[in-house]
Amino acid sequence: MELYCDKELGAIYQSNKTIFRTFAPDKNNIKLRLFKDALSLEFTEYRMIKDLNGIFEVEINGDLDEYYYTYIVENEYEVTDPYSIASSINSNRSCILDLSKTNPEGFLQHKEPPIINPTDSIIYEVHVKDFTSHPTSNITNKASLIGMVEENTQYNGYKTGIDHLVELGITHVHLMPIYDYLTVREEREFAFDDDNYNWGYDPELYNVVEGSLVLYPDEPKKRILEFKKAIMGFHEKGIKVVMDVVYNHTFRGKVSNFNVLATNYYYRQWPDGTFSNGSGCGNEFDTQKPMARKFIIDSLKYWVKEFRVDGFRFDLMALIDIDTIEMAVKELREIKPDILIYGEPWMADNTPLPSNKTTSKGTQSKMSFALFNDNFRNAVKGDNDGYYLGFAQGNLDEIRNVETGIAGSIFYDTARIGFTQKARETINYVNSHDNLILQDKILKVFPNKTEAEIKNYNKFIHSILFLSQGIPFIHAGNEFLRSKNGNHNSYNAPLKINAIDWSLKEKNIDVYNYIKELIEFRKANEAFRLDDDDEIREKLKFFKHVENCPTIAYTIKSKDGFLLVIHNANRTSCLLTYQNIKNHIAECYLEKFKDMTVGILFDENGIVRGNINSNHPHGVQTKAISTYVYKVNVIE
Ligand code: CA
Figure 1: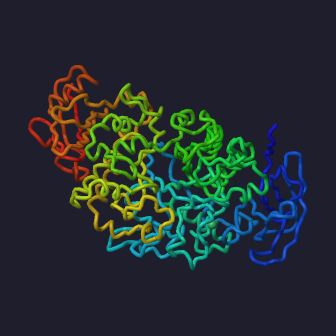
Figure 2: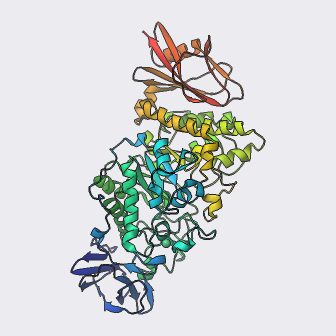
Figure 3: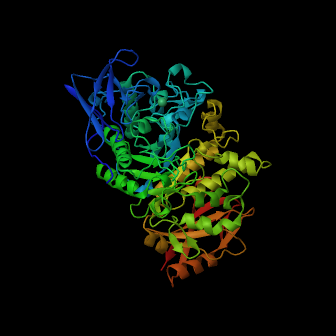
């Protein structure tokens, strides 16, 4: 029988005593080493008592708020507590805290943004340092979580920082790792050093706020307080907060705190005993082990209950077994019904985890969480880092794959087979932090196009993204053509590559305004935010044929008529005749009707305001490499 214990683990603080519990089933001797502060070399040691489930425990009387501790294993190794909620700088010692003293004023009472449907979400992924560090951000508290919510910042009159996010209209900010990771020095004096940047996919203490992203890394209470302030700041602006979580591996393997305490327990192994490497980072967390599963679920619940975060993005989610994910989703929804859960349905290398247990495409349907949709991503804009072109750059072989994505990647018909049951199960995106950012991909495949043409491809690609069924996701700066100078893996590149240059917003304000209007248009039209597969099949109908113009055209039945969307990837304009539209409506929705009217709602410049009359006497015309949306009203 596998050992399991549902007791609370870690340092459980009360004002008159603290209970310490840690899981170390194969060990005989664990001592608690207690320090009065972060640096002193003096300590007191206490022998811990082991129970039948492999849990070592000791109870120490007195108020230990802000005392520090480590565990001494078999009189030989000293490690931090995997369940630490706070630590000294650079993760050296665990810290005991009275969490009730970590709430900024108003935090416990503050209102969260209202509950929304998953398909109403618009996700903006960003690294704290990227967002806040560049001089053009004009953010005072650079490279910090507090800087993320600094108001009234601008560059040359253009909003930056959180004001920019409010203006853009996103609903969720997805913060790249903000839990403790190891490869960045946390002292403030190194905050902007070229060799001291990392995305943070190198986890150490999963329940500790990363010290390099706060103003006071050596003050454990302030670390927590700063993140809570940031969350409250976002909530007050109507923005929900998603945390990026990396439970698939730990940065350190054999010498990690997990492995020193419970040797070989937390890591998957091949039959010869070597650690498997499905993460590509040297090890993978064995999420099927009861105490490993408990750790993940405890950690997720801690962030939601204590910090009130609104969602999680799972790194290499395929490596987290589906049973663990389903249990986590269920428990998290009990705390927060609209919590947004999504992840990467892939792994980096081979795993011993049986394929029927990986969290891969299709497995999300039972619990309706979401997965990053690489099929749609590649069909729209081509492969990640190479020269393969997508539909948007004129590769018409990808039409069906793009249509599958437009329909929320449901099983739409036998020519368009996706992996979802509901549109809420797909994260639609064209790039994340990984691989070439969209601007660099377009520049790579089209080195000789003019600046205006490059801008146009960016607009066209985003129009497909934001008008498709599912949950749209962009990476920070996509909205004004952020470039990383062709760096396709900037995980440890200096800030001169990674920091967002906000002057690009002014330079590319036309693209920015267009993307802002796409978001506004999506929000104004429920027809782009359907969820149920039957409803999508019933309401969304692709044109079988557009005369003389291979392209994507479809209608969606809306409250009071039809929306007609044309994505024209051709290098010439495309005319869809009134007769063609009439035939389509008769075939798909209404056999007989007297007449129809067609007006334009959206063109290559964004929302069409004022005169919305059609633009051609015989039909509707859509310019080359652009998306137009029309309103069709039928007179019965
Ligand atoms: Ca750290």
